Image (cartoon, rainbow, N blue to C red):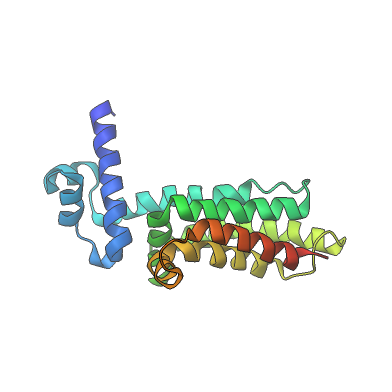
Length: 197
């Protein structure tokens, strides 16, 4: 692939992320993506044969990014420190990649038709392994005895909410607030208290 082809492909993916995160898969069109990318529709179709192909490419890259913070959790590290590191990394991901978070949320809300295999495969395997680590830490009294899968779900819910419901969060907080800085402090306090054995 030439440098120009790589640049055009990346331009299309960036434009598609914008369109999909705003309109969802069903509401997005190839014409919209081509328009945002500044390319003709035939040029876009040279790189991707369909809207679904673009969407799947975005979701595949997103899954890697989304799983990276969980992969960083060290089973041999300090349990509270490792979990808190994960909470902060997930909140940073929501702050830095809100469109990606909304793209993922839209796919899940539609029943995950284009990524069910990844959810039941790679994601489930990693979450189950992490839950086993959390369970071992709880069994020896290093963290509170909490249902490990639900602890992970709560971290997802309490971090991704700030990206997926950004407009609502900012409307309720009003001007002069930094939702992510405030959430960072709040979630640190909340989870440290929750995790205390």
